[in-house]
Image (tube, rainbow, N blue to C red; front, side, top):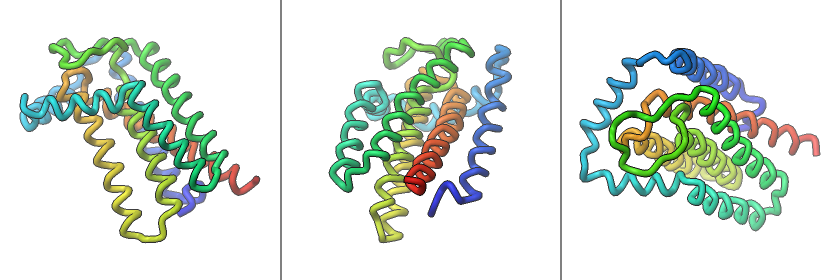
Length: 210
């Protein structure tokens, strides 16, 4: 699949923008969302205290150091596989500027973290979730580059499934650990999806040209 030529890609971008704006405006206005209460109650009713240690691993994986280590592995993979310097550059720019975009939006919206006791240490503001946003950027790019070298449809689907699982668990972990509202997660996922799809389109257009 050539993502830059697929109508599905642009449809996903439009839907993701709509979802992001749906949460952005009321959160910026300081409104309390019923969505947050309903989803938080549901998630916390499923994942009890016994799951905290498991989800704390995702706090580490999604931290700056965790993403840094994983990013170095991805860059090494792209270099060793076929010296994909353009892929390395696109990956690096997508991750670095994605993080800056997340910080800028956080500061612009200025939403405080949930008032509940945080189960892990956090310093930044709440909206959108950095772990959710950077997680979806990271794992979609990893899946994209891995799938490019696979011929088996079964392995491609397995790659997609594993990426989706990692992304969802990253988002769920932020609610279980009481450091984010569900709307933070939804906004992080949607903004991250727009961001990563734009960079994939740029990558494919540059590869076609050069």
